[in-house]
Image 1 (cartoon, rainbow, N blue to C red):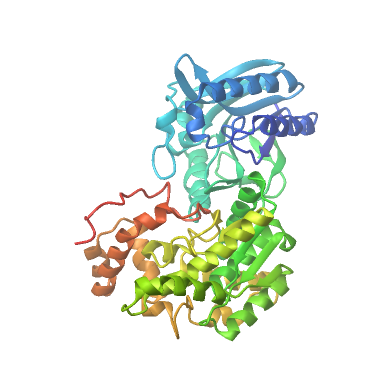
Image 2: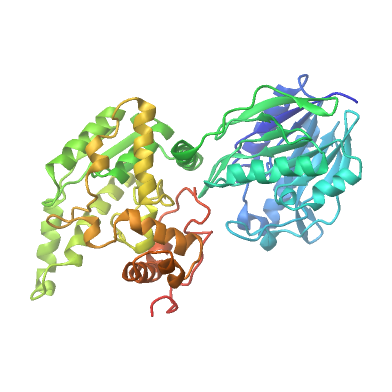
Length: 538
């Protein structure tokens, strides 16, 4: 059987940066020329993924056509397999082209259009209806795009048409269960079932809430992983296909547990900052574990010198909070500033005193402190061109334990999809990775508090996070009814209270900043509930 060399180009594209994406594709093709017979790029690499409503614009689609034509003309001496939008008449397709010698040698239109979770492809694309098998260096390659391989038609029909291997290009977003499910439950399974070697080429990098892990694969017909590209890194690797099997360098390790989540968060934060041209980030460093982990992620994403950490104490801030915040900023080498909110807070209380007269202090006064902090942080963001990085976690956002226009302020959120218990795991992981307490131990061990009232603890308002997070997972991720959750042994009063809090705070979540998606059910694209609804409120 003929030998062929395939370059797997796991690249990080940017939606709408047609020139930048094109140059990245052409540079990779030039680098692989002479080492490989064909180079494979991700799904919609020409446009970036997901382009969303840009696909409804004729000018965008025509610009994609021109960019593809330039790639076709410039990429000589190597076959290029690349994903792009395709406009045919009034229909738009998610397509793959095999380019060779300035011409299109094969064209495949994606057949299975996902329309669940974060996917809206039926809003934009028409489905193709034909398999595609084409010759590459004397081999017959079958093609498919992302969701196609999760079904059986593409692999089965390619095998029936005599394909020697299957090439699948992808923009498969990361979540904490996806990497394993994709490799074990789909790619290796399809290879074994149809006795067909598979190249699974995945996008890498962050795009708004989504982060793509790469982790591209070359899998032999028996399901053995011959190549695995590194997670969350751009990479190009050549896989030699000889005598019906791939010969490659040793597969990269697959990260697991807290390391996997942490690396996803760093990648998502880094690309949001980089692709939106922010000079750096500012964040409120409270001395608590959420802001501590957020600082760690920011420092690892863009370098501590581009991070401004601001401690904003009030009359209720414990001395240890200030000490720990200062120590952590110093451990990372981030700039640290302390600005008391007391003068602002007192001035606001004086202005409100006539209207508040005769009413006992309560939530309004507590939230006013958070809003003073939000105002200061946004002023710093405006003045220095630093994006405000929000520090709230998923558990808090689920039940509305956050202040609109206060600690909910920000351009992006590192922990928006990270439950509180996972935040603690991330903190411990980062210390293990550093080999020292880069996040002070008492930040991790002390009882969480918003420090907006004397001796305040989160558990004064919420169930303990160890109980809250499983209830939220069952209700938010799994869509289970309160009665089903109670039947699993959870306290009935806690379950009903949590369900009502989640339902009542949809309006807050609609106004929260975007954040990195790392679970299978994030707030935002994944979960779309009406703000006005009485279904869960009783």
